[in-house]
Amino acid sequence: MKIENLETLFTKEQIRNRIKEIAQELNNIYKGEEVVAVCVLKGAVMFATELVKYLDIPLKMEFIRLSSYGSATTTSGKVNAVDISLPDLNGKNVLIIEDIVDTGLTAKFLIDFMNNNFNLKSLKFCSLLDKKVTRKVDVEPDFYGFEIDDKFVVGFGLDYDGYFRNLSYIAYKP
Image 1 (cartoon, rainbow, N blue to C red):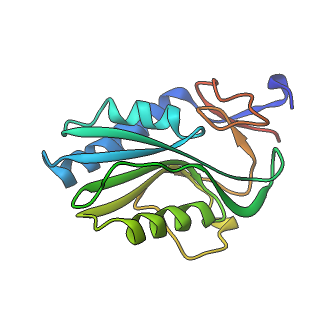
Image 2: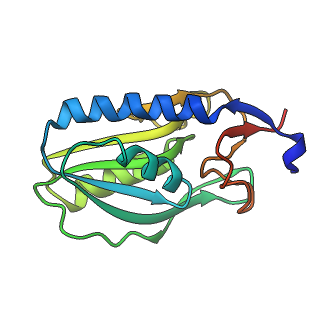
């Protein structure tokens, strides 16, 4: 995959504007309550860092690393918990921040993990992209930036074999 073969799906401005809208929704919901944002590495790091800039609430950030891609472009169907060490989240408002909900397997794994290991005050799931068309399990993000069809996308944290995460926009190969 070469950068000159990519087409823009969402511009930097579209992404930033939508992230500001999501942040405002979150600010309204939490209204000064403390939140622990759990960013799923590596793909969600750009989204998470941009989102938290607009949150006006007491916030702590944690990072976990999961993987579900078997090859550069296809999911393996299995969630690999590379590093899921977290502090005590009992009694906390937790916001999971993910780059994309595709099959839903990773989202379901994370939601189940949080609910089975902690007695949370609340749990919300926020994803930059929602690819409903490829969903294999019944799970929906509480907040998402954009719904997309069945395209393989890169940019703004999403990658192809480790590349293209640094793009300031989201692109796909037509």
